[in-house]
Amino acid sequence: MATVNQIIKYSSVGLLANSIGYILYIIISNFIGINPPLAAILSGFMVIGISYLLNTRFTFKIKNKGLVGAVNYFLLYVSAILLNSLIIFIFANILGFAHEIVAAVSLVIISCSLFLIQKFYFFQR
Image 1 (cartoon, helix red, strand yellow):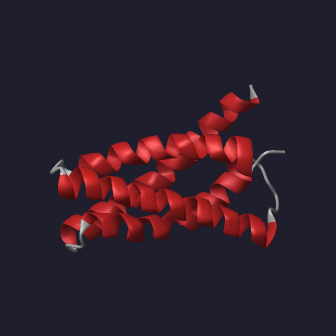
Image 2: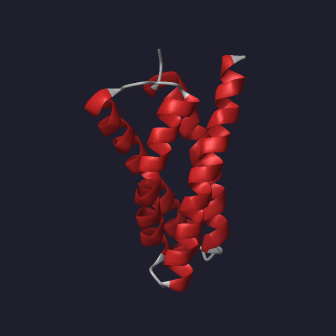
């Protein structure tokens, strides 16, 4: 049952953080005019802190992972941000799909993967 509760909490945190990140992504790419893969990197960096605080305290109830934990979380999310940017580059810039849809689908897939990594590796008790 704990896993189901964590999935619900993680989904809530993810919905909040990814909604903010996606709105920032659309603003940066569509209104400011920055190339979508770069916009994905910029918007991703803008929400790492929110995601870290909410996931450590709310989803996984980890009080203090220390500086090493924060750095590891940051590196995990930088990897995810770069993967998201690469997916957008390949599917939108090269193959011609709408970057808004590619980014949304990519966020969902990467978020599910991140849950598993955090649940079974990063926040393992």
